[in-house]
Length: 318
Image (tube, rainbow, N blue to C red):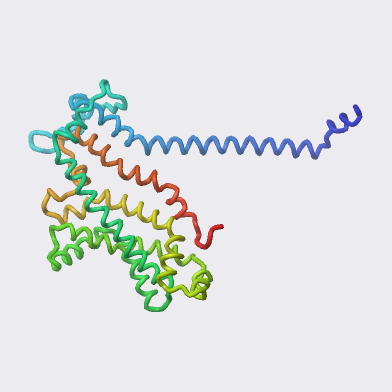
């Protein structure tokens, strides 16, 4: 028995080298993992710092915000910005927690909540109807192939690659021609017929095996049944992903309301956040915090669908 234990303890030089190399690889892997983790943590802190700063500063009083950041937003007698001679004090923890900014935003000044609901009224119809239009158009592009459809789809891609600033003037001229300028339809119509969702859903639907649709046709299913019972359930993750991206995109829009809506009463809250002035710096932190809540909730609720929509390659899941 002792001889057997001794024989097990004795290792050949090759085994010792292999064991040594294995330990070196494990150490390198641990060091590499630690460095990557530290690198990602640094970037996470940098990206989260503005959000944390906004939330914590929203609980400061107006006097404390003015004392810390007043020089940033101060103006000279001529109306221009002043030169900042001293450092700005970035504070993450307020000296005294105050809800005065939220009381002003939620109760004393209904203007901000009114603009918040303007954002909701402008964005929600765009998300819903853009998905409906994109679902039907994407099914047509994915289900039927042809030279004309490929040309139209290529035009969709070109339009999607163009920034909104390029199409802003044509949208303005068309809205004026349709007599919908200075109405919400000037925002809704370009958003509803945006090519972004059509492009993504078409690429997703084309990954669904044709054999699935052919089997449904053999069983007597029509086009509407195939669309409703096969394509839409399989594209659930993609639809949620597109909905999240559309919501975040239009929730932060600024140029469209400024150009297409001359009445400031119809502007969304994002326009106000782009026009921070000296007297409303404290309120801006509270309004920005409230404004961040819907996108965060939408992302947290649809995170799994967003990942599924990005990673799923189409077909039937077992």
